[in-house]
Amino acid sequence: MKPVLVALIAFFSLQVYPADWTESAEVGALFKQAGVTGTFVLYDVDAGKFTGHNQARSEMRFIPASTFKIANSLIGLSVKAVRSVDEVLPYGGQPQPFDVWEKDMALREAIKVSNVPIYQELARRIGLERMGKKVSELGFGNKEIGDTVDKFWLEGPLMISAVEQARFLARLAQGKLPIAPDIQHSVREIVLLEQGGNWQLYGKTGWGVVTDPDIGWWVGWVQKGERLYTFALNIDIQQRADVSKRIEIGKASLETLGVL
Image (cartoon, rainbow, N blue to C red; front, top):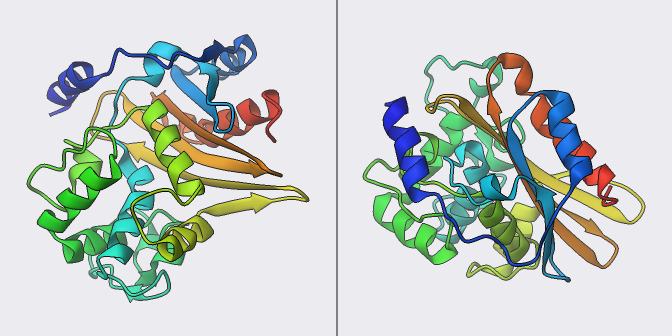
């Protein structure tokens, strides 16, 4: 399966780059120091400008993995597959790769621990027809979900680029998605990670394991006073130690660019 998916990634990768892009040597140095291949995109929403590392890769589409939990939450709430982010869903009772996933939980907790079986249950409740319609309405990546409602973000055919992630999250952060404002507010609330005196950091990780190499994501946004910055990072995960580098490089990039 992996060679096929790699070919699909190449086929569906976009080649039209953002017109207003600044390549950051400082961010590039962070990737080099960490010994990983990847991209980082910072989108200054008010200015309409992109800054980052590896512009060509920033437009390549990859499987979103658990970053899709943000969109999955929005869709589940909007079609009333779940009443609120605090309604408890069953994980199914099967052994899981992580003990923390072997527990019934609500979206508020499930998104924090990236509980795959909980979000698969949510997707099954949404159903293939409603899911396909909503993914298309949201304009998420290539908008392709195939015919298996609980795996398309983990195994494909859904794919998205870092630039597309940044644009999608800008709409969510501003409440401009075609979803009820209160639902967007609820989802923003459950992906809040940290906050300080005049800033809030929101984000979600992802780890795609069906390609070779694996793909690691960290996407989100920073509200800093009146300014909004969205970001997306993806890297090739060659070894287990690379997993933690998603947030490490991401935070270092935000600090280097003066956002955190």
